[in-house]
Amino acid sequence: MWSSILYVSLPDLPDGLYLVRLKSGEKTVSTKMIVE
Image (cartoon, rainbow, N blue to C red; front, side, top):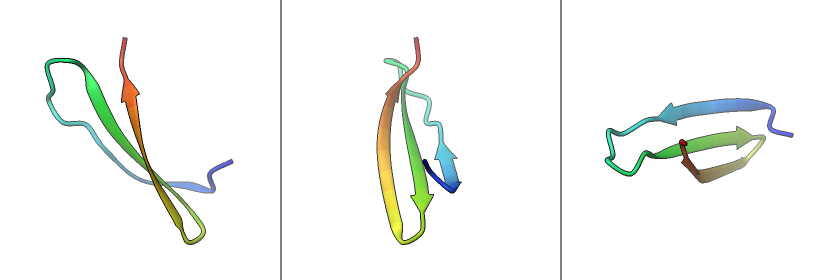
């Protein structure tokens, strides 16, 4: 589980694709999420 959310970037994309970056310790993961 992620210890914290570093920041959430929600660009205005027509396909509803959002970029979520999660930070856990030294790891930073960028996850692409489709908002239905």
